[in-house]
Length: 174
Image (cartoon, rainbow, N blue to C red):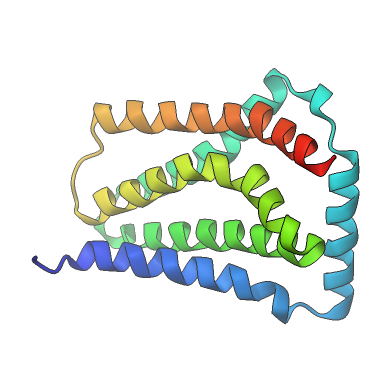
C-alpha cells in the first residue's frame, strides 16, 4: 500500500483534535470546571423536547454547514489549503471536549449521554468534514456530487440533532 501524505495529515489532525479535546477538561481551573458542571447539569435537567421546530433545524444547519463551508473556503487558494486541517482539528477538539465534559459531569452514564447528544449526528458530519478536507488537500475540485452528498448529510445530521438526539437523551435520562 502506498503512503498517502494527505490522508496522514487528515488523520493526525483529527486524532490530535480528539485527544486535545478529551484531555482539556483535566486542564480547567476549579472555577471553570465547576461552572461547566453546573451548566451541564442544568442543561440536562431542563432539556425540552417540545421546542423542536424549524428554527432549531435552521440553527443546526448553520452549525454543521458553517464548518463545511470553512473547509471548502480553504480551496480558494493553495496557500490556505492547509487551514482546512486546522478547521478539522478544532471541530474534533470541540466534539471530544463536549463528550469528555459529559463523562466528567455524569460519570459512566455520561458516555451514553454524550453519544445520544453528540455521537449520532457527528457519525454523519465528521466523515463529511474529513473527506472534504482530504479533497481540498488533494487539490481536487469540489464537485456537484460532493456538494449534494455533503449537504444532504448536513441536513440529515441537523434533523437528528434537532429531533432524535434530544428525545433519546430525555428517554435515557429518565
